[in-house]
Length: 308
Image (cartoon, rainbow, N blue to C red; front, side, top):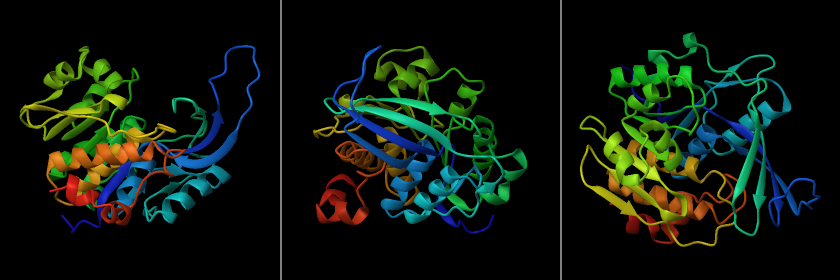
């Protein structure tokens, strides 16, 4: 196996997010004034790779994009953050997810309206052992389920850790992808879908196993719970911040966690820092604007505080 070229290779969803900020969520048959309109890059894999890059990891994104405005914007934003897009497959009429996100400024909550028109998964021939062997950690999400499954199976065969982000949607092979994850990080809704259990502790008990390095359940303002290899369950409270926008917080958590694992940090440190950075992100609008850099965290003394 050739020497790894990237710390993390991300495979999954990229999006262009048009964010609309309103005072209160609209009700049917009313008019609501949009106070601010912002465009940012988004998507589970895309934002996770940006977060990893800002934390000092070398990251790459693999997916299918076209030559339209949304595709050009997506690649430009990723490359501006230092994410390698050389393994993006270009196909005519392909494009990223296009989302309109309504953010309630009073609470920071958001509703996502998205279109998958033109979205394509990488074909099986594109997901090869040669490609996967170039990373230290593989990140996959459930959006491109078939490509993610093949990539995860190859990574497991090569002994490369798999970090997985599973969304709470009924989808074929969802549990199969979850089973391939060495590091399974899911929101509580996805955890309930996967296991049929309700509380974070119950979900962890159902997901944790001796051959799984770590399982994390994130519960927004209540923080997260994690367990290593069926070990003790630990709760980490959410950081106390003035939330402006929770868009992308879960994606940021995944990216920071993957970066720490790729850089050889221990799992509790990875969870603590991911929890912190996801909270910091919520203080700024959009899915990426609020992600701090490694230098910013070091200047505030937060790396030494949260990472061993």
